[in-house]
Image (cartoon, rainbow, N blue to C red; front, side, top):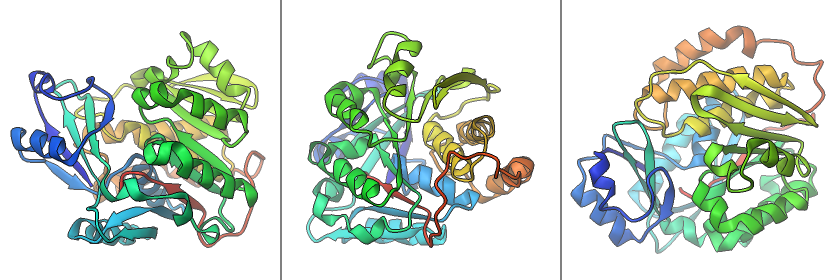
Amino acid sequence: MDLVVQVEDSFLETVPGEKGGSMVVSHEVLEDILSRASKPSVDVPGGSAANTIIGMASLGSKCGLAGMVGCDDQGKSYISRLLEKEITPLFTESPESSTAEVICLITPDGQRTMRCYLGASNEYAPEHLKEDYFMGVKLVHCEGYAIYNQNGKVVRKAMELAKQVGCMVSLDLASFEIVRSYKPFILELLENRFIDVIFCNEDEATQFAPSIDETLEILGKCCRTSIITMGAKGCWVLHEGEKKFFKTIAKQCIDTTGAGDLFAAGFLHMFLKGSSIEDCCKVAHTLGGAVLSVVGAQLPNQMWQKLHAEMRPLLKKDSTQFSHILHKSSYRENVSLDSDP
């Protein structure tokens, strides 16, 4: 569950780790941060991949979410809220640990700093992944935070099972701290051609190479589509050898939490429809910009209604001329692997 708290910059001086990143902490440290902060303004189902999957489901994609929750009220609430979004819950329950919690500390500049108690999700193991989760699925989306689980063994197993059935895989690197800590593992996944679509922001990209061009070259050698988001400026996309920059319109920012996740949701939803990369980026920027105006990573229903009306020409556009998507019949199009719930 995401616990969103608005704090001053001075508060971060009392919190371990760097501003703007994500760091795993003990339950005691999380409770200490909460005890010294104001009451959470938002308490919602969270996790990077979950935010993306909820966004895709809200656009009309058929989705499932895999992970582990505790046998507690938080876990029950998490599952019930997914069902409200018509997302298939593919969860294992821990008999001992509580559902994971992430505190998102939002400073006046809109920057989010996350400290994560993994709880039950830390027990999620490769053997919890079932082969039938992947049958008939077009895309498996993994978040970088899931690499924390057994040093990447769960992520590797998910990607292996996906590739066995001809399924595409996308990975959102999620945090520069994760890339810094697990760079050799991430490069190994890329070199083994496990990843078809990869998302990273500017901070994460510079962990691979000093320049955007060099990072795109590294990523482009190993996967079909590489996206580097550049905040209010737009994004770079290298798709099947063609590199292009797509501008966006700067939006007023209250909270950056979920901006990358919703960007990925818009991009992947359109990508699975077979839309052009330009249209993928238009919807991605629209969703990523919309979530900047709310606290937390979830958009209210009335905002979704407005966005659907605004994007109707793009969402209804015939995309049959584009061939980058695998066509498969499926009762569930996308499965996400989430380490946080």
